Length: 552
Image (cartoon, rainbow, N blue to C red; front, side, top):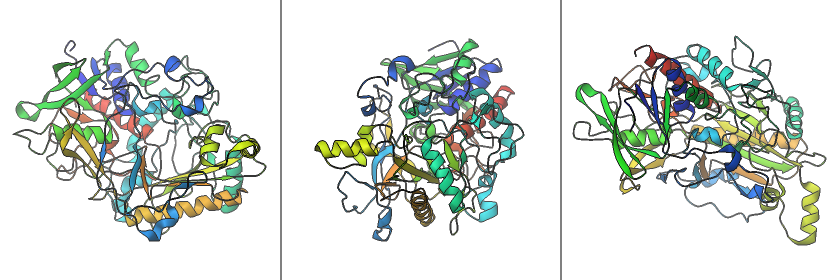
């Protein structure tokens, strides 16, 4: 496909992009294989049409992978207070099982899912690295927050993370590279309400520029981060790590390159990947292979590459590939607040509370949670979203009501930790395959009692915050209880010191294959207490790239 590279990377999201930057910066020639397209922010993210609100992040051909769903867990009526609903759609009785209403939200393309994330840039709470040691649950990481700290700092500087002077629960040796963004009206209401309830909020750390940097402008506060950033102020992987890596002249990015199989050779080394691009099948040799396809596609490819010598799949001597899947455990509630105006303006998730983020932050559960101001993150940024979710009716009276309440919505979002469970995993469908003959992945994800405890707690706290802020009736509730709708997934090729219980070592290097590395959230032994994972993925990939460049 190209001149023999030093390293082949599969996937150009948070991990693949950061690894490419680290490796090209060290003088290595990198071939990056991306199954999706390259997006053009100027033309692909238009938000100037009258119907802008009806368009989410674009989905051109090849930019979404087909994912199937297996066991998502049964619904116990005792938990029915967590049922998802809104004020416009008639509420129906929940079925017997959770549904994959939106499934796993992801993007295949240059930059991966950082193209549609809202830009939260978080370090994991230090306690999340030692759940088993300190709390007797989950699995410990084979490294600590201190081990990742210099790579966290490097990623923050390169992206241009904006954050507060101090951040609860996270030690720092240097300030954030950029000043925190101002809080919008909705966030300011939550700050006041949280202070009265003993749940303090602070400015969130965001991979969004508050001042110009490296030819990128500061944020204009349009609030539409998840629809794609046309200006480049959001620190997605395409305008940060990949842009700088391509400047070196040592990075080749091939889009539309679907990797279908990993080939092993003598001594257990990975010898090649098989790729289909433009209808042409090719064998690409791989002196070093870095898998960064995400916590669904990475285990899928490893399992689908099984053969006579490796009947359980590549890198699966432990039997852990695909296991330990952890989803996004979330709750969101919305109410209208009389007197609140302009809640649709500003930056998504601009205020956050870390007060319950530590692994022991929630009574009766292991693993903490966080709360954010979520009006814009939930898409309540225009009148159409109000009309379809919050304000029922039709005709002149409905229009008058809509004009009166628009801009007064207040939403609280909460995300919590998930513990690994034997029932939650990624497997291969025995019959269904994609257009290239690769078995489709099947995601099973079951809520544990610990997860249900956290959901009930987040719902109670979220409702209390809305009431304290002056909110009226709860008009919308979205909950993981009855809907699998994950933006962050983890754990399906976890790292660890013991090759019998983990897939890679502490640097992401496969225990089974000396030239195979993994650099995405499938490495995570635990999910954290609601943090956005992209910064940790960056840090792990930078650390792996440094080790690869040093000779392994």
